[in-house]
Length: 94
Image 1 (cartoon, helix red, strand yellow):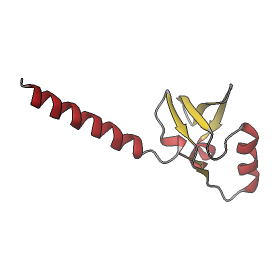
Image 2: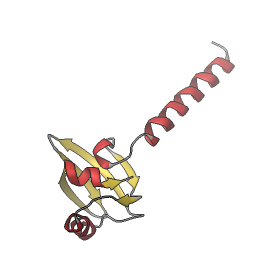
Image 3: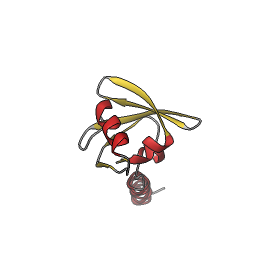
Image 4: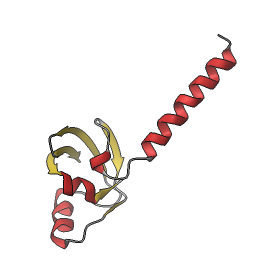
């Protein structure tokens, strides 16, 4: 296989991974062991927004998806881990 073909294959692979990463819109869709930067919290319920803020989930904060178990998403924010339900994970836009 020529070096040009290898380079083109590698470029396609890298472009594909960029597209799939950009396709993630909230933590419920996030990949395990991946860090995201929170862009916003979108929820109609002010209590839900305040609860997420109390966990350290606010715009600009780095959050990592640790695992997904049934309807829960385990996340790491700063030095803490939390298990949040699907509704909360969907409210965190990354």
